Image 1 (spheres, rainbow, N blue to C red):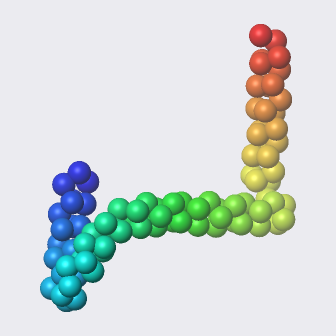
Image 2 (image 1 turned 90 degrees about the vertical axis):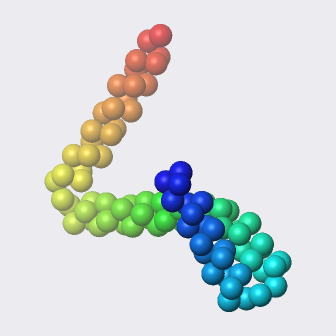
Length: 88
């Protein structure tokens, strides 16, 4: 990854430079690659979390035993952790 991204960015910028012409366009493109990549990764992670949350809510509405067991286990873990923290 440490080698792939800089090479990929350089090749993309070279292609944009060949296709557009003015230097400021490819310079702006090069500068925007990293922040846009971070934004795309953030968006992807949020999308996955949203989809998985919707899936889990469907499982709860359909009264799937496994989903309800997870909710009960989570509640139990929170209660036990609170008790441990209160004891210290």
